[in-house]
Amino acid sequence: MKRFTSLLAVISLFLVFLLSACGKIAEDAATKKNDNKAKDASYTVEHAMGTTKIEKTPERVVVLTNEGTESLLALGVKPVGAVQSWLGDPWYDHIKNKMDGVEVVGVEHEVNLEKIAALKPDLIIGNKLRQEAVYDKLNAIAPTVFSETLRGDWKENFKLYAKALNLEEKGNKVLSEFDAHVADVKQKLGDKVNQEVSVVRFMAGTARIYYTDSFSGVIFDQLGFKRAKQQEELFTEDNKLGKLAIEVGKEVIPKMDGDILFYFTYAPEGDQKALNTAKEWTSDPLWKNLNAVKNGNAHEVSDAIWNTAGGVIAANKMLDELENIMLNN
Image (tube, rainbow, N blue to C red):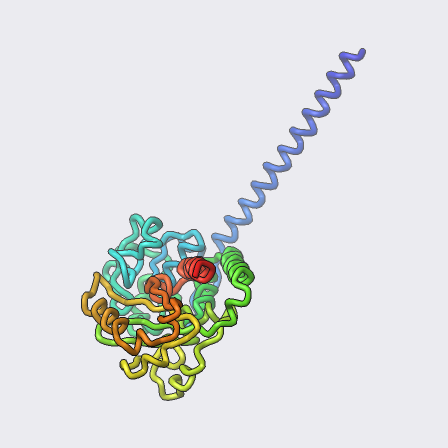
């Protein structure tokens, strides 16, 4: 009798597990079915050029901006085609391991329509500032969604791209994780964020001071850093780049000072003229007389990470590099 009772108990337990497993399988099947329905359903996206209807979740995407490429990768989407990185051959070092097999379709300001068409995309993501002149031709190839501009606040473009890819929920998660990263770095830096920061970029034959509407500027603002007070007067209404940046001559070097100064050089393909410009300016007596330089608070950083790439992957890397510099200086 005891054996019979034990056998019944084992059988009952087995049936409980079996029913539970069947329920889980049914639940997973229902979830998959709903996901497939969502993928197959059409949706519309409002963007810089109007409203675009997308028949189903895209699987072959061509992206025409550097920050857009980073957005796709952060969302787990490898594009079939992308514009070449401003620095790198053909991709930035920090993304090249994720871009194997991706076709180059020109550069941001000159895209190759024939190559794009040959890839048979079901979505093209671009930017009005860069490609407005060829929007109609792109839209004739595949549904095309454009962001408005390319300034410091990459988050707005990221939200648009996530919507175009039918990945809004995942996009919100990526942004939440970035904001948490900012909060973590801010907490670790403590009072250090109360310093005045200055950002300088060297290019072939010229230099710029970057300000609040730049990629790094938006991140510094979110962290709570102040900007060098003496630079405010430079960014008047008639400055052609607004509060993104201003080109300056050597006589303005004293205004590059700050409690802490970061500088980088845009030298595609090892542009010697740009490298010489950086060397010339940083060897100038006015540069050497900056308090940030004399106090060991002038730091050379990556142009790709701190400025040119302009996307969420670079933003996270900039935070890591900034934390390392500030806590080990």
